[in-house]
Structures are given as C-alpha cells and as structure tokens.
Image (cartoon, rainbow, N blue to C red; front, top):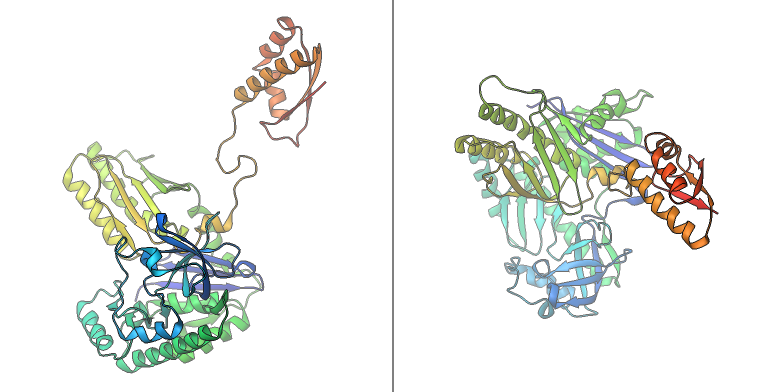
Length: 496
C-alpha cells in the first residue's frame, strides 16, 4: 500500500480537499458552497440556436449563460425521452466530427437531456453532452453507449481481464466502465453497484419526462461525498475529517458502499485548522508559486494564459559534473515528476506546452519523453501527448472539467489587470511629458499642477529631473508636482 492520505475540511462556506501521495501534495480542491460546481449535473434543456458553421448548438439549461453542445456530443439526442430510453437497446457511439450535421440532429425549440461536461469559463457557457455518464462507487454507467472498459489506472493485466469479464457479462442496455476503486472487488459488489446505477438512471429518466425545460433533473452528490467516491480507494491509508456532521456523512456513505474503508476514517478533534495542522497550506503556497525549485537546484516556471499553459524547465543553480548534455538530461528527468504533480495540483487543462532544456542526444530525448508518458499514466485526468520536437518542446492536451486552482483561489490583479506587469517609471514619465505639453498648448497655461504616485514623484525629481527642467527652460512650463499614494503608479492627474 502506498503512503497516501486524504484530508477533508468542511465548514458552512466551503469544502476543501487535499490528497498526499508518498508524503507530497498532489491534489487540492476547494468548492465554495455559494458557487457550487455544476459538472456532472443533468438538465432538461431547450435548444435556443443551431449553428451549422460551428457544428454546435446553444442550449438553455437554466444557468446564466446557455450551454454549448458540439455535434460530436449530440448523437444521443432524441425527439422525446421515450425514444431515447428505447434507443438504449442499440449500440450508440459518439459520431466522428463531420459525419453528422448538427442541423440533422437538433432544431430550435427542441427539448434535450444533457449533462454538463465542463464549467463555463469567462464569457463561455457550460460545455454539454448528450452522452450521459453516471459514476458509482466501483462502476461508471453509460446509459446511451454500449461500451465496456476498465480504468487505465488498473495496471495488472490479469485483474483487468477479470473485471472486463464481469462487466461483459452484464446484460441490458448501456455500457459500463470499471473505476479504479473497483480493483479487487468481487462480482457481488460490482453487480450491486450496477443495480444501484440502473435504478438511478430510471429515476432520472422518469423525472426528465415530467420536467419542463429548463430544469435540473439530477444533481451530482455533495463535494464531500464526491471526493470520497472518487479519491478514497484501497490505496489511501487514512482519511482525516474535521467536522462531526461530515464525519458521520462519510461513514454512512462508506457503510453503504465500501465498509472495509470505515476504520481508516478519523475525526480531527482539535480547534486548529486541519490544513494548517498538517502543513498543507504551507505546502500549497510553495507549490503554487510561478517558480518551483527542484532538489537539484533547477526550477520550473509555470505560466497559465487564456490560450495554453506554458511550463519552462531551467537549469538554475545546477551545473552538473560531466557535460552540458548530461546536465540537461538529469534536470529534465527530475522535472518530469514535478511537472505532472503541478498539472494535478493546479488542475491545469487544455493545451500544455513544456519547454525542456535542449538535448542533442536522441536517446536522452526519448528517455525523457517516455518518462513523461509513464508519469502521466498516474494522472486521473486523460491526456494526449505529441512527440518531443528537436528543440525540446512537448505539446499535450489534458482534460479540463473545471477552472484551474489558480482561477478558483485568485482573481485578476486590479492593478495590472491580469497582465502581470505594469509600465516602467521612464514610460510613465514620458507619457506625462506628452500629456503636459498637450494640456499647455490647449489652454495656454504657464503653470500646471501634476498629481502622481509618490514613486513617480521621486523619480521625476530624482533620476528623471531633467524632464521637468526641459519643460521649464524649453517650453516655459512650470510644473508643480503633488503626491497621491492612492493612485496607481501609471495613473496621474493634470490640474490647471
């Protein structure tokens, strides 16, 4: 058993979750109860617009913004829910993009049953699918797809074949995937989970028939129980919970789903904050800095932009002992594990570009690439990776279903508006000069009051004092500088 521990901190305002593996923080989530996630929820919605040019449609599901349904996610829609339920007898696979036109599947005003795949981000609405997935404790039920599979995180081939044989024997509509928590479970436990999920789907189907869109048909379980369901497996040695009610809720859930794990749940009784007591807050603060130091003295720089996530590997203080090639290879290999940890911890998704230190040796590039691929196999989120380029770049995509941890815990800086940079003092002073000359010309003023941030004032009357002298001697303009610490560095006011 690996040394993995789960920490659950619950209060009336938020639920915080942390997972440590081999003594290192690898996952952290927080969900504010006033802004609960809608990922996994099922809605009966109404199509508001069909966009053939984008092969997609907008669907009103009752949220602030209409959801977005791509054609490749719309294949399971039907004229009504009775047809949808009957169609489950047949195998239904996600169509390849372009095989089916969106206008052949959907029309404005049509009612559809959809599930939220991804939270809305920025100006975009939630990403939707008509291919429903219902996760249980050991299985995932796919009521609209006749697919069978086993989690890729179950690596033992004999165990995979055993589990696959059990789910292949399931009769009736829909498909099944064995979750990581299903490893080692017997047929009896898997069949009980199957029956629960089928009953849940029948209730959802019946509720959808009665509902008028837009309507929430089914909400996923609470963040607390969702965490226990998804992360608390046999590989986790212990689970700490800091709230009495939450502790009871976890025990009740496990009693119904996995009683063998109950002895591993412990109630944290101290008044001290759980995350602080186990130094998770401190570890999280260090891990979320833009620069992450490696033990060798090298470091990573992680930058999240709207388009992609860029991760740069640098040699830093590590100089090596033999050759530049050996130094680059050693740092890159060390960086691989930390890169995947950062992807998991920060919940980074979408396009990720990793800039490894250049290596001339093809074998070294292959070894780093294979090490990265192997490390990504331990990541619960699916990813696809392209081969490493000759200049050391690796591009990959990682499944994203919710905003990253950085977007959850922070907001754009009101000072720099999220750019991460502000204008330099010479730039601000030269802008002020142009504005002063323009103001003097418009109003024929010989004396002007200038209100600036104290830092700009000190620069104007110190290193850049020639600017004020030039305005006075060449342009006959007397400038009276006043300070206002409430202004931003690049803000100023001209008073006549």
